[in-house]
Length: 102
Image 1 (cartoon, rainbow, N blue to C red):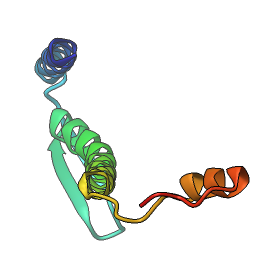
Image 2: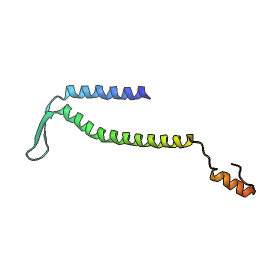
Image 3: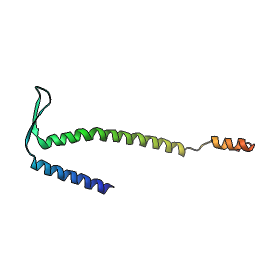
Image 4: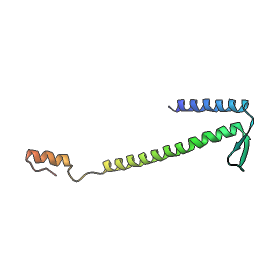
């Protein structure tokens, strides 16, 4: 899986370099009436890509962090020895009429 991810990033990087070489033209971006930004087209494309990628990447990292915490908490619970009988053991003992062994 890492190899595929590396290949995809390499292809994107090569495409970006080719795009940058062929489109190295100045662009004027009008943000507001009195705020104008003059830059090269590849810089605008890279900033737009990062503006879309960064929030989604942060959301993904937050989700992974949350799931990792949940998994660690559940693993910690399963590692603790249980002194009390579970509800299924109590139900089975009640149906058979015996007293559960502790």
